[in-house]
Structures are given as C-alpha cells and as structure tokens.
Amino acid sequence: MSRFGFAFNPTNSQARATLERARAWCAANGVETWDAEADDGDRIAAESVGSDLICVLGGDGTFLRAARGIGDSQAPTLGVNLGRVGFLAKVETGDLEQALAKVAGGDFALEDRFRIEASLLRSDGERVRHACLNEVVVARGPRVRMIQVEVEVSGSHLATWVSDGVVVATPTGSTAYSFSAGGSVLDPRLRNMIITSVAGYLSPLRSVVAGEDHVVRLILRQAVSGATISIDGQWDLPMAVGETVEVRALPVPLRMVELSGSTPFYDLLRTKASLLPY
Image (cartoon, rainbow, N blue to C red; front, side, top):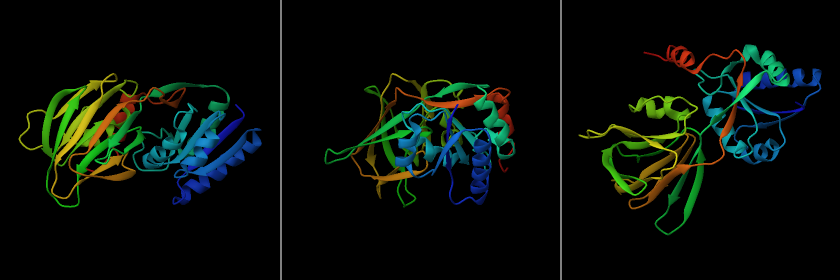
C-alpha cells in the first residue's frame, strides 16, 4: 500500500480539516497521496488508476459524486462519514487514522457493489449514458401533476404507472429514495434492480425486483410539464414525452473497503435508521 487518494467535499470545513489529518498520517507512514474535490470527476478518474485506496471524506452525496469519477478503475474505496446518516461512509471521522492503518496493513476485505447504467434515448436519436451507484429516477416536472410512465422488463410490459415518478435502484441504493417510496431494502452484495413507483395512483403493483440480466425500459407517455431524470440524486436531466430510459447492469462493480471489525450491514441498518428524524 503506497498510494492513497482523497476525494472531499470542498464546502465542508470539517472535510478540509480531516484531509489535513489524512495527509499528516500518510506523510508519517511513507504513503504517497493525491486529493481532489468530489465533483472533479476527470481528476479522480485519472488518479484512480494505480491507487491502492480512495478515501472519500463527506456524506453519502459526496461519496456518490466521487464514485462517478472512480468508475471502472476498481480502486478500493472507503467512505469517512462527515454527513448525518452515512450508509455509504462507514468510518466515522474520529476513527480516520485507525482506518488508514488497517488498510495499509491489509486488515480489510473488499465488497463489490453492483452498478447500473441509465441510457436516455432522445427523440432526435441522441443517446446519453450515465453510470449510477444508487438509482435512476424518472420524476414529474416543476408542476405538481402526475406523470404516466410505461415500464418494460426485457420486453415484457410490467406496468403503466400514473405517479410522481419511478425509481430503479441498486441494492446499495435500496436504503435511499427507493426505500422512501416503499421498496424493499436489499443486501448490498446482491446484483438486482428494484423498480418502484413513487406515490402511484390506484396501482396494486408498487415495487418489483429484477435480476441483473434484465433491461428495464421507462417510457414517458404523459406529462403536463415534462419530466426530470435524476442520476444518484446528484445530476438532473430534462425528459420529454415519448423519450425512453433504458437501465441495465454494468459489468464492473465499485469495490468498497470493509474493514475488519466493521459493523455488519443489518446492525448498521438499525443503527443508521435510529439517526433519522421522526
């Protein structure tokens, strides 16, 4: 272990202070470092290749932005939680140095996290692709009026939902928007897609789990003011009636560091849920 990278949230003063601690630890232990703002996907992509660890300093949003840059590099990735809940960032800031020492000493395992690709087919034939770690959402536009979305799974008609939107989530994203919309929480090591309607109107079918070999198609059939495609809750694209989003598995996962002694997922789920306001 000789080269660690740090992606951080530049708007969080605690992240900058944590970055200085990380640099100091690495300097004292002979580890080369680089750092980048989490939004700087090009730099993260360039530096990820050949890195022994990428440490993300921030909350889940910071982790998702950094993951886009990490892409297919398969660089081991560890989140240090500077946010509120932090399902993706398992290490708390006070444990930073101990976590770095464990990684440097090889005292960890790697957990592969399933990723998906959302491919938007525009009415003019243009195709726009985005990788997702959490979810892709087709949601109503600025007016509070439901949209109609036809959902197909590998060519089979599943449903035509009249709703506020449709979420296609990974197991990693099952604890996020999908869960809020009524979708099941999946073990993050699985390779499935959870398809869930958001506030569906008079629909007996609310949520379905599809395997990794399927292609999910979302066709916008009706919308008073268009719709929005949201990628991991971080990037939004406009969508017009008649346009289609295809969602499929990506072959290369994100490789997350699981430190020895880490809290098991189901204990973490219970603990993190207790942090939410009621």
